[in-house]
Length: 314
Image (cartoon, rainbow, N blue to C red; front, side, top):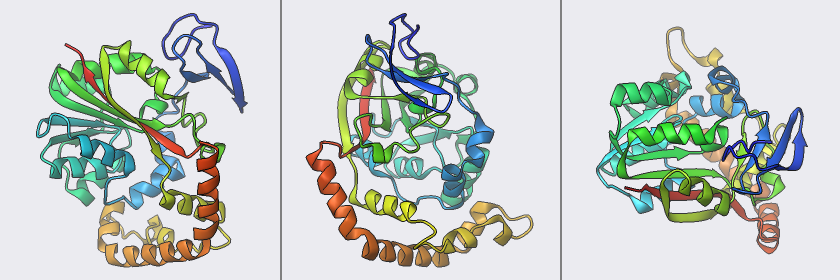
């Protein structure tokens, strides 16, 4: 059987099953992949609640994986392409830090939100082949793939195409869900949403095989605020009233008004409701979240994401 990551006939080892998908680990590259490896496509993501909710309620600030990159600031002030940019919160921060920023995503709703909420102009609904035609080879000094690699049905082929857009000596930043995290965080780390799982060694092997050398790698620990959010969703329907979701639902959007414009119009009211909801969650869940965090630390399962910065070797 061929490895879905390194493409070698390696007799991968069966690990677990999820529905019609089976997870295998390659004994050569160390990567884990689901079989069949098939991305569900843009329409599926646009309907998925985790992504459609974010399009209606875009994060304003960079997330923890983004902040690792903003600490590094490789090729500062160069041309940066954020692939799978989502609603643009990272790209807006990169531009604020001096980068000439561009973004692509196959979710058209996310692109529109990035334009209207963050005022980003150089954002496009393009795949990698289309981006190569638009920008040409070696156009970018930096390319970022935050929480993207695990969605790709052919990571090796995809990275080879992405390399075309990157200058020799340029930088690639990646973040993925960390394979060594607790099972509590793996409810959505399954197909068809995610198709691969990554450890430090498998990531390094993967990048080295494609002419990249790792500059920095870090297992990002689970933020305490993330555990609070987890408890919020675990007890959704019991302690949650969905006030923000109701305010930003399509029924509340005026005729001819985009979701992003509706969000901006109701921004203060939404932020007030979000702050009150956050306060409620901390009051309810701080103690159980603290106990859970201590257990994760003791069991060495407190990692959440894997961040890596690598350089395209000359």
